Image (cartoon, rainbow, N blue to C red; front, side, top):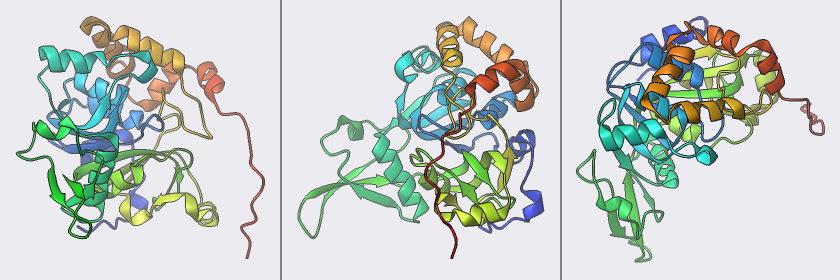
Length: 313
């Protein structure tokens, strides 16, 4: 696949990005593990009422719960699914246990197992050997594939290893701190498996806090997790990861997350959440206006700089 795009065409709106790249039936990899989740794009996926999506992620929280509750997702490949310290993912439980709004299927792997699967796909390998699932019941239950793992003996040592199949994605969504106009994507703080998850996809849509000059990216190249030729589209979305945090830009909005956890205890409450925060706003910019400038200012990261680094030659 030719992944090189014209630089001038990469910066687009979240509406255009979702309409262009996220089709019904897409295998969609969402980014972020506990940080930098691409909510501006995910909310737009819901807003455009996509369907029959297979969601791929090492750990699902509100991102997966919203898509499941809205009827966008009917299949998942991943591991943990919950609201972390805030308790259960209520939409997920309703869908799995009661088929509300529809029955979903989930193929479970461990967090590390999913990362290994993304790594295999990124490297063009059919599988990845690991020991992470040895002795686990996870490999006994197949839902989406005839065989989800295979045990064999290492021909060099005779030890048992587990082979996990590569996990390919049609589209990967990722939130990052910044990139340049060509899409050279920079992240700092916790990266998780975003680099491997993006490299496992045919198309990458990057949601960023800001686009900066190429010279800034070049002066700090070790922060670049994806080169520009691998990024198909750029969506400029300040606070795009809200209510999650983005290091160097803003903190977690715990009040908002508590509100979500409370509202989604009932189906009626979740439908009200959709109306208030997704269907009831036309875009991410409208979402930010609804949050209010005072709240956003309160969440902004305070300056805390490390010792300077000399990038000169």
